[in-house]
Length: 441
Image (cartoon, rainbow, N blue to C red; front, side, top):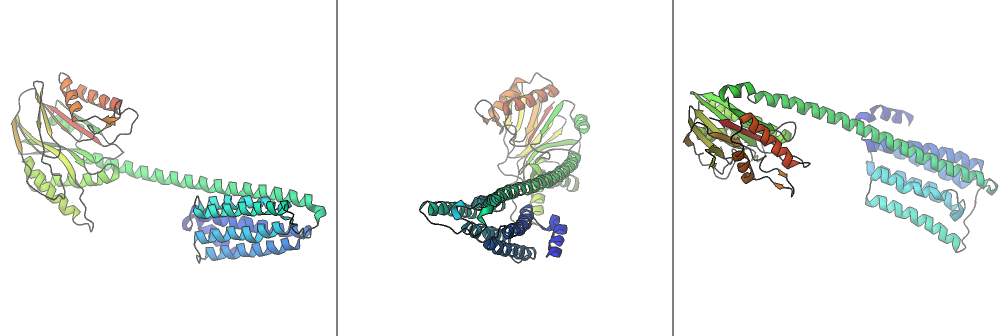
């Protein structure tokens, strides 16, 4: 028996959950208390107590051994343990030591407490609570109506027996609490360690994701008057911005991939790779053609999965060559502000990814004028809840905001847009990733 228990103690960290460890500790402690009270019963000449405590001890040990050998599950073991304490130990000893006046009667309090710790708030715990209340009420009512329970111990030692029972109950409640707090503390520590590992992994993933984003120095090289507002909801993001050059044209885009956080970041890597391959491998420069090929690549990647994956991205992509701008979009529009007027070009209503219809993406062309401002963005900004009534910011308010700051430099525009977002959001959680690009000709 001791070999089995010691073997368990060595392996409990890797093989047993916190609840299982708590159960084993409870059984071991109460088995030792059974031996202690068998000795107390002997000293006060309580033969029924000796028999009950010895039987209780062996049932505890047998239950523990069977559980450690994985012959019965956790829930069954818990109920056997509680049932043994209820029926064999407490009920028997209470009945033969005075019933309603028995010093053992108060031990029924322990039954629902242990059930709650081991089994949680469930029907089984409610049943054990009900049985404990019924047992105590039955003993009290029987005494009131004149039933005389047997007092099968040396009654001259009743005060000593009462003191030992009270001290014993207090001691085991204290020990149970200590064990529970110990396991809870261990759980919190393990949770903290796991959380730390996860955060470290996500932070490292952020470094990788940041590496695939164009550096600010490169952005300023192509667009001297520009800004990029990039605010992931979590550490990593499903939004990303992208810049590439081909045939004297600068390609730039804002993409919003399915989801956010880690799932969104994984999708963003696949979609970013699709854009890169479309330009570098297939030599495409027309925004619409790039989106067609990117959609094809993304679908091919996800079709390798056995599941039906419909993840992908919404995107606005532009090509700028001197003052000639070309645009194509999947859900995400292009906004051009010229002389205080906002000109909107809407996107195709098809995402980059698996979709019921797959029509070619439309390329729109524009001749820009000096002073024109171009804006590409994901929906995270306009969909943010906030304000006095906790409503979405919405595209209309975003248009008005951009129109109101046209006399500001692009760096100042970024500052104002970010401050307005934080002011609108207030104490609410950020709903989604946010990415906005502004370029002034």
